[in-house]
Image (tube, rainbow over all chains, first blue to last red; front, top):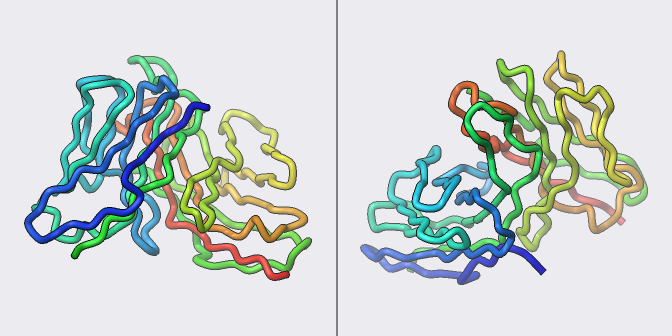
Length: 120
Length: 119
């Protein structure tokens, strides 16, 4: 079955350490997203990528970095510059978003099961 | 910029009863999509229902239906015959149909409503 796999399920970070969260999808989706979820805050967009080798900052990109070298993979690195990294992180993907001038699809985003990141 | 507001942080319903979760949004766009997602304790996000703004008819998926009021910018979710498995966080989300205002087609989420179901 197609889906999105996030790993690890739980991750611990030491002070000053960078950590990388994995997100892999086999849905053949062009677009991928990273969200951060805090209690009472809903989902906030960190980074998104609509095509391989291209990505854009979301609303809260500071302290995070991403890469999109392959269509299936969109890893997120939480750097030491992110002072409050404790949160639940969700990865999502969706079919091609749009070509210039065309309408965006009504297709929903599909989500992984998330990674819980905590500070040691 | 578009915003989505869910004014009910928590709701409770008796099993087999009906409950309505509210969602309002603010946008200057005329064409867009609206979604309701469910997040059970497992934390997985599951699509419940979607609505295209250009469609007059309210979307329905089994026990889930929406009341879409475009002029009022309201998009409420009605759950009929509530079941214990409906207990979850519910998120309302908006996506513009075109890239007006630079939204890039990204989803904009409300802060969620936690639904409890009493046996």
